[in-house]
Image (cartoon, rainbow over all chains, first blue to last red; front, side, top):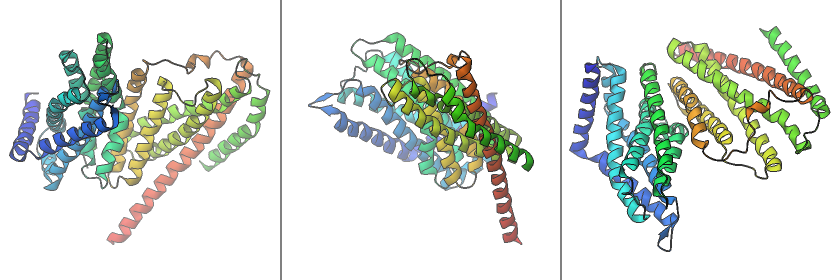
Length: 227
Length: 219
């Protein structure tokens, strides 16, 4: 068991080292997410005021889109020098490889959110400091669920011909509960009279989603990644 | 095998030829009148969409963990059946809803989860078609995840108002209505069974031809 987490941690460390040297993924993904928010600002802001309830939806769409981009790029990097094959050949538990990759993606997505949540608060007058605990829990559980499905699909798609278009096609139908729960939960916090029990309900749903899909991914990663 | 298929096709043909009469003789529903007759088409296609989605998920799991090729053929065939029956359900549903509720579409849990199930299987078929080598395994993963996702979609949209009748309507139908419904269901079930069997066989033969081509190339 300690081996499992050691391997996962080694993979996270490797990904972080590669990333810190170039900052390619962080800079491009953050910039893309900020552009997403901006584009929505042009669509949903009229006479200086944002539409009601728009903030939550825009936040989660930006998270989902930039997440797809990050997932694709993370595995593209492993494909270029056939390093994914090397990882798979290593005498390590396959699920540990998955967990390592998953943690890397979650870290990257959380970093993006550190920037775009204040941006949404600024552009759409969203009260992001009203319930920081609840908002943080929503973002964390939602990101884990989205990344859990996305990491598995992106890893499977590495060898596929049309991986760029296939990733969103496969990921979005499965990620629908994350988007619904994220948007509804965030809207419950941002609305004029905040509805805390509602936000807690969505966090609980996301927790269940995380548990089910991380388990399912760990269970299927081995047969799916074996040629 | 052939003999059973012909027999099944015959049964389906008889049911489809006689079902309109059975539906015609069924009593009119009090509030909706003639419109309610679409029920005998909508409910069997909806129930069988779910049944074939379940078959596809189970077949995918067998393919993934037991490496049975035949399970994969069944998975492809039943996924196509899900999209076909799902399309029938999604066309007949709004037609009925427009008359009964006054709207074509509403974001009710049952409608949303059916739509998402249909979209998941469309994505599955796109993947099988354009995914290239290895898409059979990927598809199996997608089918498994799609199955696990249905309850989450259902719960997450359950917070909105519900217009759709509950499934408890079905066991409590009066006999003159239940008769034609189960009769239509039989026709749909037998016919889809025939189609899935034939489609799975076709997939097996396609696979065999591919293997033969590869063998001929190598020699």
